[in-house]
Amino acid sequence: MTGGSRAIGRRALLGAVGGLLGAGLLGGCSRPAHPVVIAAGPTDTPDLAFARLLAAALDRAGHPATALITSGNLENVQAVGESQAHLGICTADTIERRGPLVALAQLHQRHLHLVTRGDSGITAAEELRDRRIAVPPRGVAGHEAAVRVLAAVGAGSVDDLDGKWMPMEDGAAARAVAGRRVEAMIWAGALPPADVAAVEAVTALRALDLSAALTRLRPANGTYQAARLPAAIYHQSTEVATIAIPTLLVCHGNLPHGVASTVVDLLLDRAEELVPASTYGLQYLSPANLIDTAGVELHFDAVRRYRVRYG
View 1: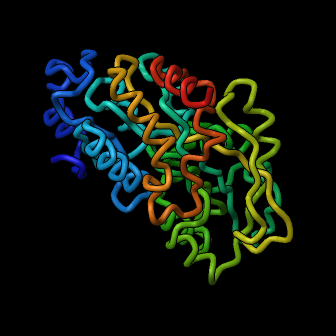
View 2 (view 1 turned 180 degrees about the vertical axis):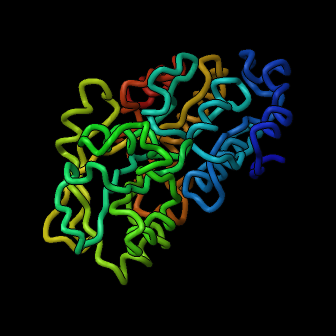
């Protein structure tokens, strides 16, 4: 299927596109003989919508492409790293030590939201020690950062996963906070998705300051950046300091230059056409941030193309 999307599991992905490397797409030819495969994310997410728009734009530029529905962050990284997909969407902290992977651009930034009930009496992240906390499931955007942040504020360690730290999707986590089944939740995004906003509309929530966690994390995790949550999100009196996680478009280091340079041109020239209709507040394709890949090396041909375009 060209210019569309497919749902995959791990085995299906390997079987469906496992012959691409041998067929020549990753071998250096200027025009791919097979579709460019974009490992995107779950259904009904902005990143999948972006990948579909990018696939259609690549089609029009002469590179047939398809967006794959995946379980998310970690599966995308594995697919690209194993040359089973050519492009993938993931947070920068997922690929800190993934040698074959390089970046084409920063797509947007996700912000961490560490949230409690407004009437919980918890006013600082450091007060969450030995508390029950809902965290993003393994493999999805925000999981790595959530675990690191909670450890940094003394709330526990990775050994608490499936114990005090309970993997939950965002909506289920918000309902668990409202129902007092957990004392806090941590998720990554911009504006609350609909199921979280629905809970917040009837149960006051409070975001906790993560500036101390960032100070402790930065020496070993340079991908994390300072950010602020607007006061209006949780009806608080002031902005709340938090942590931003860059989300990147990545590829294997041997992606043909024809594909890499075309992607860069599309991101620069067709940005408005590539922004999904519903982004939940994510700021896609900011010109100032495209080449800020949080320390992840840029593909060599992307570097050349950016230099030509930026002058």
